[in-house]
Image (tube, rainbow, N blue to C red):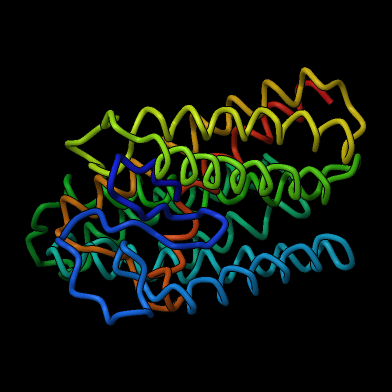
Length: 307
């Protein structure tokens, strides 16, 4: 979750240090020497970030199919986090069909590809509508049915559906594991570029009403780092045309930034700082996936069309 920081602020989410930004409530006082200026426990964030990164790289290189299970577990937890936060705000999304259906979306990508993903998504959306219609019993009067079902379908598309494209990318016959590794490196490049340029040069807020710490200078840094990363990874890892690297680099910067802003706005409307507390120094699983999810979709589209 990249935060391209305006002058005097620091706190990207998803940067090389893995230090997320505070976006909704004002940051709390930090213990001296342990927290970053973003109000996070920096040593914990570093440790968790490196551990996650190294684990994923090892899986992709030595046992890539295991990543599907990792994705499924992460999406189940992330969906639970989002549903919990929504229900705290009296938005009654049906958690059981949402989580079970999300698992179907991920796992059916393995034997059936995109057809399995689309079929599972449509079936789960319909099941969630029916569940919400009758969750007060056959004689009960549904309350806020339209709002709650609309938000449920949004969550279904936002979390498990977008995540399924990472699984589809992995299952490609031509270097699927390296395609996933490429898009993950590009998201990190976007985060690191945004952090470095934002801290050093950030003066002009990008979207202050949504994420006050994002700056246009940080966005430019993300773009430069991501295009360079795209050139190198697509050329060296995928051994493909370098112009594909430029295209996917630009695309990832755009959607990763928007993914970060989408979660920032959701959290702002809910009045919360993080979706969860599972990862020390980071927040919840969903707070680590906000940029990754749309990047998986865009990478799948570009690589499937052009490689």
